[in-house]
Length: 113
Length: 115
Image (cartoon, rainbow over all chains, first blue to last red; front, side, top):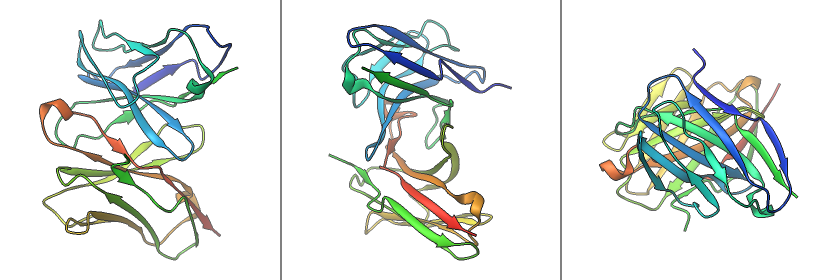
């Protein structure tokens, strides 16, 4: 059972480039989300989805797009990368119930030069 | 505005002693609190949680205490082991369908357990 799978593990971009961070889960979870982790800031919610076809913004959504066409996949798109988007990105999923724990992927380390 | 705060960036304890990690929050509507543990180059993993209707939850060496009046929770690890060395994140969730699955995290505390 793979859980939450993120690709790639590492990525270096130049300012202005675009890319998609992939996330897939095989636990049939309805809820999926993207977080970024920055030093001294903890994990901050970027976007989330409560089911296929439904997405919404989190705490820091600017510069990112998401879509959820299937229950399993929740890609995160950077349209025009900026140095401020250098971070570690984590995808997570859960059943979405009250107090339900999140399952995290292993992360993508992104550097924007 | 940081709704969940972990004011100690790091903590160092001796193996076998107690580790106490603290977390403060500002939103009295939070109904669940969770602790996550994170090793380098890995994603956070769930450790223990507590509902706001309780004041203590225990799981083996890990105990979480909740003081609602002070808006404060703490994670106790007894006895501490070198394998517990990691970053610990406190997280909280608010009730309601619009908050389903949305956790708000603190900044994290790096715990080092010395052999």
